[in-house]
Length: 222
Image 1 (cartoon, rainbow, N blue to C red):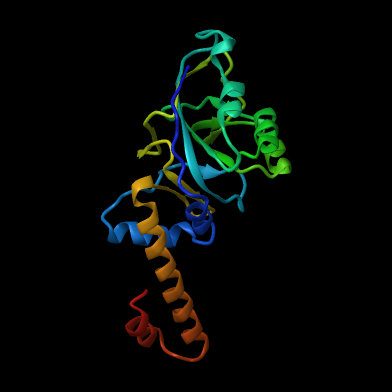
Image 2: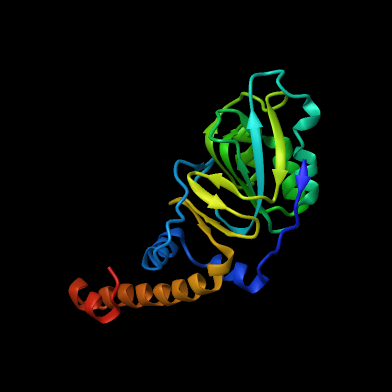
């Protein structure tokens, strides 16, 4: 498996996204003409949240026995990650598990923030108990061992219909998953912070007895 280098954004940019939800970011991206919403992938447990740089992994899968177990290089992927990274797997939406409780335990100990999988994960109860954020298209007990091969790490992939490159910013919460192109991240963050302030002002006005229409005119928000 080829492992390419990844360029991560400054920590202060990543930290900034941890205080912004996906709905606000989605509105900003709409204004910028960018479609970055991942489709069909959900958190294993409500309450899981992520904001961090993507490390991308391209996979291919077949029937049991298609690939030697050595091709299922989860340990290599975990070793290549840094604390705060988010692993993003492209298994072409196959209902085969890429990830389980042992990988979650190792990743959590390494400081990896979480994983997003266009494919399957398993050991859901154990993952919830570990409190390690996993987002996947499927929950399935079907193992990837001898079914799945890791082809490349840190190349361009697709996840839920959206292009993901290494170093792009992933923001995920109960509402959805957003992929922010790394070259747009600073602009998106600045606009998102402005929107957050306007929404807080809107809410404060409503609680102070102002009408919805009046606060819309004042803040521009809906």
